[in-house]
Length: 316
Ligand SMILES: NC(=O)c1ccc[n+]([C@@H]2O[C@H](COP(=O)([O-])OP(=O)(O)OC[C@H]3O[C@@H](n4cnc5c(N)ncnc54)[C@H](O)[C@@H]3O)[C@@H](O)[C@H]2O)c1
Ligand SMILES: O=P(O)(O)OC[C@H](O)CO
Image (cartoon, rainbow, N blue to C red; front, side, top):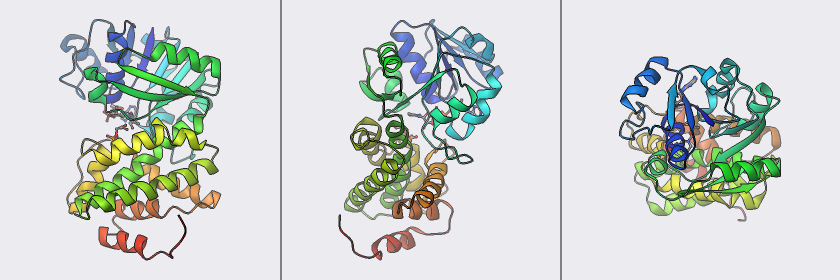
């Protein structure tokens, strides 16, 4: 039996694909009334058009997940540290399915898990995947990072489905940081497209953004080959190119001078956290700095572009 914490778009999509593959799934959401209603309606508000099969039990009571050996965590990153201790669970394996860096502690999701659930083996699931695609059963491939290779292998086998293919690695930092940092670049790309700066500008931002991801993530222990994989280059390609990305959409609205849509956009906090990590580790992050300025309203798109173009010429 698999437990999923977070009945938002992604947690629900994972529940649907795992149930389709034959797993019994308990899906916990913090809004108890909505979860009770979901038992009858057989859908959750975030994915109203995706039916929940009989194999999924929606619940607002975390105790219903106490028999689940594996728990997937799909709440927004900035709420992970408050969510975990409140659940009162002690799973053997905890797989983070959130993308970001905790702004208070600058920890990735697996470190947050280790802090609150020291007996659980933490893992991270990340890569190019829109919840709607996974829920529809469209082909998707993700990275599963787990420092314990044998647990990682078992999780890979358990969580892969006929349409969701997992690749495993022991490089937890690489999977975490690739998935977190790509969101920052997606905001920058959205802003460039929204402001009408063109496809060439987007390609330049993606490439130089990837260079920043490589610099910061390797300074924090990630391996380059992981960052060139699904939870890095792969997710960067998806998120920077698709208007369906909420991070891209946020940047796009800013680029057009419009009010951004109300949505989970992990890249805003991650950009701030990345700048702090960069300062600590002596890593220059000009695209991230411009994105932070843009999101905070301190820079307009033209100022941000000027700041990037006026930097000293350098080697690639
Ligand atoms: N939606 C996607 O396509 C997608 C794909 C891959 C990864 N992710 C990642 O999954 C994570 C969740 O995103 P999502 O798309 O499901 O978001 P969402 O906005 O659809 O849902 C978030 C869920 O978390 C709950 N939540 C919000 N604040 C909370 C808090 N303080 N305490 C407890 N619960 C809280 C909400 O009630 C909601 O059920 C993010 O880190 C995101 O980057 C999302
Ligand atoms: O909608 P976004 O920007 O949060 O992106 C969703 C996923 O992270 C894409 O892999």
